[in-house]
Length: 219
Length: 166
Image (cartoon, rainbow over all chains, first blue to last red; front, side):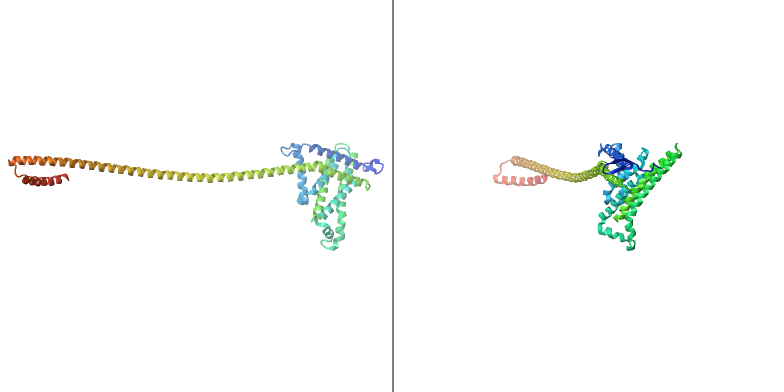
C-alpha cells in the first residue's frame, strides 16, 4: 500500500512539504524545456532538417487540432493546450517508463490541471461574449435549469480531474498488483497498455474535452 | 492518497511556469518559423504572379509593335511600288515622245531634202526642156512665147510629179 501514497520528498522551512509529484513535475518541466531549447536551436526557414520537420509537423498537427475544435479566432489558447498535452503525455508515459510514479496519480496535480481548465473555460467565454452574456447564459434555454448550469462550472473540471486521476491511479494499481503476483514478462504488454496507450489517450481526452468545453462556453 | 494540500498550488505554479517556458522556447519559435515560411511562399507566389503579368504585358506590347511594323513594311513596299511605276511610266512616255520627235524631224529632213532635190531637178529639167525645145524648133522663138511654153510644160509635168510623189 505504501506504493500508492505520495510521499513527501522534502520539507522546506516556510512552504512546507513538497510532494513526489511536484518533484517529478519539475523533472518533466526541465526535460521538456531542455528538449525544446535543443530542438529549436537551429531553426531555418529554408531547407529544414529532419528534426525540425518532425517538430513542425507535431506542433502544426496540435495547432490544427485545437483550431479545429475551438475555432481559428481562438487560436491564442492553443499554446496552453499544447503545453498541457505535452505535460500530460510526458507525465503519463515517460514518468512511469523511467521509474517515477506518474504525477497524475496525485489528486493535487489533476485538481490543479482541472482548476486551470476551469479558469480557462470561463475566461474564454467571458472574453468572447462579455460578462453580461456569461451571466445570462446560465438561464439558457429556460431559467429553471440555472442551478444545474451553474453547477456545471464545477462539474466539468471535476469530471476532468477525476477521470484523469481515476484512470492513472487504476492503471498504476493494476500494474503494481500484477508486478507483485507475476513479476516476469507479463507486466510488459500490460504496462504498454496502461502506461503508454492509456496515458496518451487520457492526455488527449483531457485537452480535447477542455477545448470542447471552451467552444461550448464561447458560443 | 486522496488529499488536497498545498502541493496543488505548487502544481498550478509549475504549470504556469511550464506554459510560459514552452511558449517561449518551443511553440513560439516553431510557429514563428512556420509563419515566416508561409509568408515566404506567399511572397514567392505573388512575385511569380507579378513576373507573369509583366511578361504577358511585354508580349502584348511586342505583338502590337510587330503587327505595326508589318503594316508599315507593307505600306513601304506599296509606296515603293507606286513610285517605281510612276517612274517607269514617266521614262517610257519620255522615251516615246523623244522617239516621236526624232521620227518627225527625220521625216521633215527627208521631205526637205527631197523638195530640194525636186527643185534642182525641176530647174535642170526646165533647162533641159528649154534646150531640147530650142533644138527641136530650130530657132530661138520669141522669148516670151517660149517662157509660156515652159511654164505650161512644167505645170503639166509638176502635176504628174505631184501625183507620183503621193
